[in-house]
Amino acid sequence: MASIFSRIIAGEIPCYKVAENEQFFAFLDINPLAKGHTLVVPKLERDYIFDLDDKMLQDYILFAKKVAAAIMQVIPCQRVGLAVIGLDVPHAHIHLVPLNTANDINFAKPKLSFTSEEMQLISDAIHDKVIL
Image (cartoon, rainbow, N blue to C red; front, side):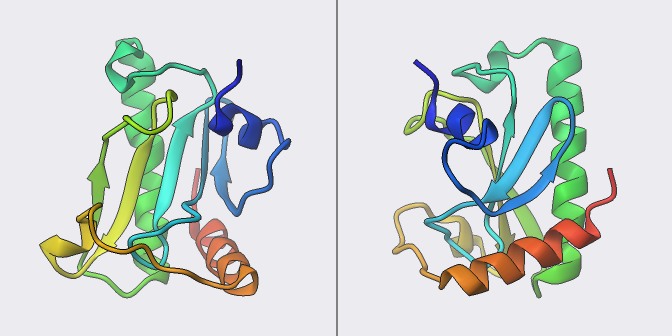
C-alpha cells in the first residue's frame, strides 16, 4: 500500500509543493513547527532514510540543501534545521525547519496553523527561490 507521501507525490492528495525533480519532492508540512517547515521525500518509497543507497542519499541531501537555501531567502530565520525521525510515516523524509532558537525544532511543542492562502503564499515564495 502506498504511503501518504507516495499519494501526495502522485497527486492523489493535495499539498503545497515547494520543489520537485526526477528523484525527490518537497512540500510544506501541514502541521508545521514554524512558518516554512518543509518535508523532503524521495519519490522511491523507502521506510528508512539509511536504506537508500549511497548515491541516492547523497543526491537527497543535496536536493534538501537547495530547498533549505530557498527557505532561508524567504523565511526570516538564523538557520534551517534538519531532522530525520521517520516514525510516523513509513516513507523516508527530512524535516527542514526554520530556526531562531534550538526549541524551534522541538517536535513536542504545539504545531502552528496557517490558512490555505498563507500556505500557498509560503509555498509559492519558496518555490520561486529554489534553484535545482
